[in-house]
Structure formats: C-alpha cells, structure tokens
Image 1 (cartoon, helix red, strand yellow):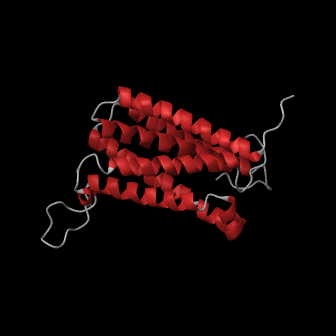
Image 2 (image 1 turned 90 degrees about the vertical axis):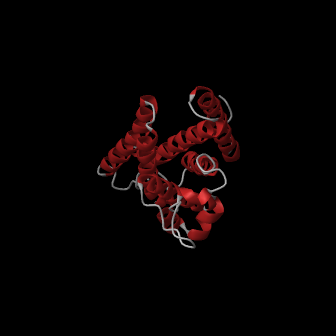
Image 3 (image 1 turned 180 degrees about the vertical axis):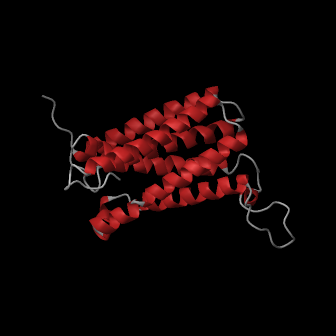
Length: 222
C-alpha cells in the first residue's frame, strides 16, 4: 500500500497538475484559435479561468451529492479557486492590451467624450468590460484570503461569508462571456464549451442544494 501523502505534498500535486494542464491547453489554444497572439492567449486564459471557477463551485456540491462530508474549506476546492483567480487576472492583464494598444481607458470610458470628462461606456462593449473588471477585482480579493492564516484570522463563519462572493463572480463572468461571444461572434465550438461549463456548474449547485435536504447536518454546497 502506497504511503499517504502529506497535506503539503497533496497541495503541490494539485498545483502542479493544474499548472501543467493549463499550460497544455494554453499551447493548444495558441495553435488553433484565430486572431493575433495576444487575442489567442487572452481567450484561452479566459476559458481556463472559467473552467477552474466551475470546478471550484462544483466540488462542494459533488461531496453532498455523494453524501460525503463537505468542510468549510477543502484543499482541492481552494487550489482550483486560487488558479481560477490567477488565470482570470492573467486574462485581464493580457486582454486589456488586445483592442486599444496604449489607450486602456477606452475599454471603460466613452472614447470621444467632452474634453476633460469622459462618461462610462454603457454600450455592450463597455458593459462586457465593466463586468469582467469587477469579477477580476473580486477574484483578487478572494485570492488574498485563500490561506489558512486568513481562515484563522476571520473565523470559519466570516471567511465562508466572504468566499460566497464567488457566486457573484460566477454571475459577472457569465455575463462578461455572453457579451463578448455576441460582440465577437465566437465559433460554435467555443460557445458550446462556455455553455457546458456554465450549465455544469449551475446543475451541480442545484443538485447540491437538493442533496442538503437529505443531509440536515451537511454544510452548504459552495
């Protein structure tokens, strides 16, 4: 029987596996997607971040569906959450250089506003960028507190309350993705992958909530 890995070793294995998988998908995306290099990198990072977020939201529900303990924080769920934030922030950083080289404010402000004052962009392109930026900022905050030290500092109840911001992130991310798919007329394959990831997370959450009815002592599916 193989010796049981320490917690640190398990977490390193999680991070290494996600990193290798993400790197492989990134290379494939760079090779097969259309557009310039920055666009391909940004788009692939977006889908990787969405996949990691979907996994983060689904793991707790899967525990409940399988009638297994669902702790406030599990290492695998937290590690997927960490990578979701890292990949989303990388996508944001690259994505903000795709359309307006050197004029990043055009993503969020009306390009031809009055001198000295430019209102927020409220067209579909502006809304897509606002939702993406808010989601990225929330993920950055969740990344900061994704550690045992912050769990101990905030306490289990407060820490979990903050972590529920991931549901807001999921909604903003879905809106951001839908708007960009409409704006850029994404290929049907990418639309299907997006739909599968979003639908899968929603179904997992719904099944997890239903499972709590037969497990009164179970924690929430988040």
